[in-house]
Image (cartoon, rainbow, N blue to C red; front, side):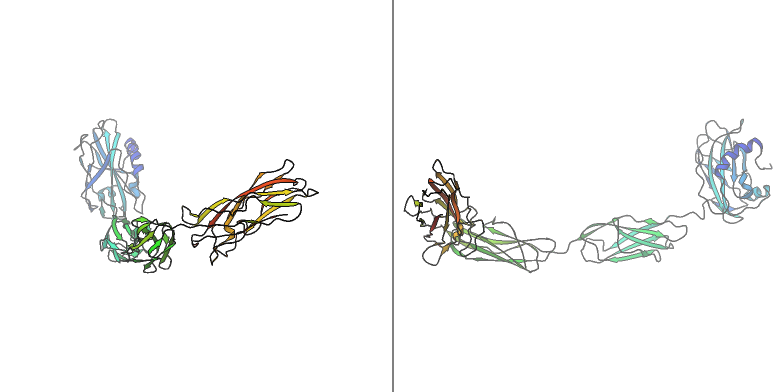
Amino acid sequence: MQLSRIAGAAFVTVATAATVLTAGVGAAQAAPAAGSLGTLTVNPTSGTDLVAPRVTTSAGCAADSDSYHAVITGPGAFAAGYQIIAPTSANFSTESGFEAAFNVTFADAAKDLSTTIVAGEYDVTLNCLDAFTTEVKGNFTTAVYFTSATAWQSTDPNASQPSSTSLDITPAGPVNVGDTVTLKATVAPSTATGTVQFKDGADNLGGAVAVSGGVASLPTAALTAGTHTITAVFSSTSAGVNGSTSAASQLVVNPPAATATTTALVVNPSGSVEQFTPITLSASVLPTGAAGKIQFIDAGQNLGLPVTVTDGAASLVTSSLGAGSHALSARFVPASTTAYAASESDSVAVTVTAFSGGTASQTLSTTVESGALTISVGSSAPVVLPAPALTSDASKLTTGGTINSLTVTDLRAGNAGWNVAGQVSDFSDGKNHSINAANLGWAPKVVDQGASQAVTAGPQVDPANAIAPGAAAPADRGLATSRTLASAAAGKGVGTAHLNATVSLQAPTTTVAGTYTATLTITAI
């Protein structure tokens, strides 16, 4: 039977599907999308223009169809669509895929169209039909590709083919920081050209490495400690070959071994010391460049806060050790355990004997000016302060008391007002030891006053913080300089007022035991 171009109603029916499937002439096109019912498989998969191949549907035709035909479209005269299989029910099935044979060869089809075959894509559409109405109920599609005027194949010769990339790491790990590992990527096909970028997670490892003979390698010693996720990303420069990425490989990199350290401790004074005596603990660490802190320890208990190591040394001064036996040691705690190892000194035995106590005394005197303004001390007995006691933080010795009451009488004409001030000398034990006068402070008080008077107590003056003998006193601390005890304004001074003050003393813990005396001079003007 002679086949021909589709004409009339049949042409209209087929042309609707053929228009969607028509491929342009020249550059290869993507394979046609599957038809509404599925795809076709060509058998054989390649041949010449003298072959009349067969196609097999991927499923059965629509249930409301009873026959089929097939159309081929392509470059030139094939663009309008050529009926390569006439309407038939041979092997027809709505239940499963079936085979259909071309009625003519490609060469015969070209002859019938008075044309020649050119290289390019030829799309094949098998339409399921209602034989009575010739209505298309669904279709299957595929394509064949002529690589010359006479040879064809069922795969697009210009379609990109996939590549694959595998990754090998030598050694496979775990390795240590600084070790050299070799990353080797193997690319298939081995003829593919391009580059491989090795990656650690999202970060690049070095630059891209050219592929040679299907292989790209990168040695590296730059991996830090931790677990690394390594991949190899192939970027193709070969026409028709796609890039690819290897599966991820885990590489464990261990930190470098920590450098050993040694710690030594010297205690001064050592052996037997009296309670509250300052003791200096000096620790040394080797190597001297080891960064970290020293925790001083007393029989397993932390002694103070950790002290930063500087140039291999750290020290702590303490006077808080209780009476009894002590085992003192120093533990080095490195800033980085991956860089240096911890170490601890041998213990040093120290025996602290009970505190024998201490006393302090003072003599307070008053200078009375002549004239109508007089000042007198209520008692001539020296003011004896309690023995100084060590504060809870063992930083100083403290005591306090009350000075003898003072009587100020102003009988002067003119009611000019007055001011009473006091200043104390350094405390001395009569030998070569002293307590800085600035370490004595007071809180003035007006005990009572005449009805017509307006006497105001002077401001409280805090003692200096146990400063050493001879040290300069802070401007606002202590009675080493004259401080106001009380004052009366002009017009409000005439009469008799009684004054007093509580005093407080803060002495250094280095004060040698003994009885200390100072003179408090009270001046009224």
